[in-house]
Length: 367
Image 1: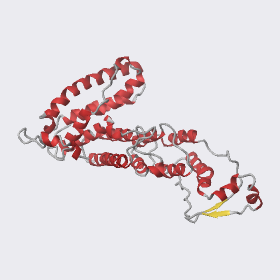
Image 2 (image 1 turned 30 degrees about the vertical axis):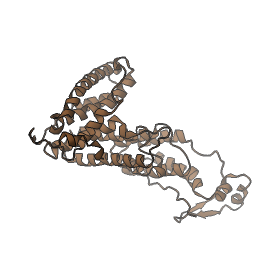
Image 3 (image 1 turned 90 degrees about the vertical axis):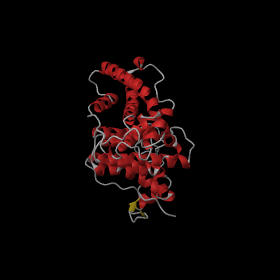
Image 4 (image 1 turned 60 degrees about the vertical axis):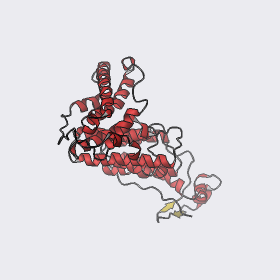
């Protein structure tokens, strides 16, 4: 029988972070990796005398690492919930690649020791990763959910990845060489979502089908429209922009059902975060001739008008409520309004559209 390998960590940029990781490795991950009878020698009072009398008792793991067994108290272990808060603090605003690469073995250690991720930690750590350009770490984690405990099925994980791509694209003014990488990563998330939910469509408590998340669809639409505008001479060559626009138009539940003027500041902020990518996606889609000149454009134009009015009013009300306090929704609003007008490389003629209405309707043929 193969023994699990104890997760290892690279030295970090913070001595406290190093101590944090080493404590978890020694107190939680190592005991979980050894055989049960070795674990009993460490923790069962009736068997601890063996390692007390023979302090040189060691176990060799499958990777060759030798572990010295010692007597321990069963409760001498770190608390998971408090430790996850501490881990998020170590990584908050941290751009160090090595520090972030330690996240994967830590998550694998949690799974090995049957420690569960609590509450919003998966989406919270995803947001922090995207804020410092470490989204690849999260994508690696969600690509192996059974080993890491983080999945695109968990609430807001896919949304936070897409919001990260949206912010990166806005900061690049939806133009330039970096957009190809951003678009590729976003499509990779869409494919992973499709694969993971196709294999097991049943959703458990705390899971969601992010394929129906308006933010996920909106960011995919933004990037597909960008490709049409800048890569294909304003031609929706692969029909992805039309496909995502159609799905977004027919999606239920993305419009606020209550009056946001009477909502709390937190509710208004949350609404802005969700609606701003949708507004920008529709706006960009309407610049693509094959969308703006057909029935899809006629449907999207009034949606954009009402959505723009709602966002403007909500942003104004939220700014009045919070003053100079930072809010994510207002930051996204200001970032988007700081963009220069998107320049279209070429205009296709109305008589030679890139996709016919029949092609647009074939949304089930697109990924």
